[in-house]
Image (tube, rainbow, N blue to C red; front, side, top):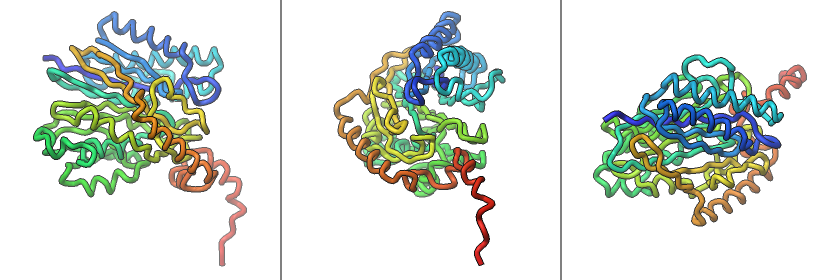
Length: 365
């Protein structure tokens, strides 16, 4: 059977009244472009959503990962949406597009990309997470809990199909290198890396037999552009059930609003708040950081769904806790740990301020 590919490609190309909400007309333009690709047979199905000011295009097809035509379709959609954003004088029009010329692969051009190719199971649940106002390392803690923590994922203990554990592919985004680590065998070594969320990020997770389980967009715009142009706002694809963690186990880690880097000007730590699509509007101090979760069934390379997973009153206490944490962190103002540590501020606007003071520093005796 021909394999199915899921491609999630996202970008911020303009928002209304600051960095909060992508304009509906931009999503309509992306829908027109993807619908044309559907009619030509390039895509089998698609779903477009947004998290804050980011447009997330979820596409299914049979062309494999890093397909030039699929990537160009996404790029064209973002370019046309950027034109409309400029006409409407939206804020940050074309922010995530580092070039206006497609070069064969959208990776490295600004938009974030998470993809996976697999042979469909008799029943294939897939969950897509989309974030705003945070960085790829925001997925480190929840993905570890989903695929390596038996206190979160009971299947690691009681399900023979999960008992052998998983393999984690970790990127060092500063040194442009990667490592693959086995869990549970190397859990402590893996945690030694994953705790440094600004440098080491999970890219993919596999079963021990090599079957793909999860994929994350890991593009860091500040490292590409050499200056602060956004905080990356990652997306992730996770397979669930029948040899993978159950859907409930994939969702459970987000009941804890853990601290992530990003928020205002990409320069602050704050709680990751799970919300419905409708409430994915980071308004307070451009935040706090948001995540939405969409549940699909994959059927012959088409999307059945989605279920808006965080549109659930069981997450109300999490949102209340996130709001309280946001208030607590905000009270620190420009002080750490609310503001990111100095090494994380290197690509923000702060160095421009410090440069003015450089000549005033004198060596101490």
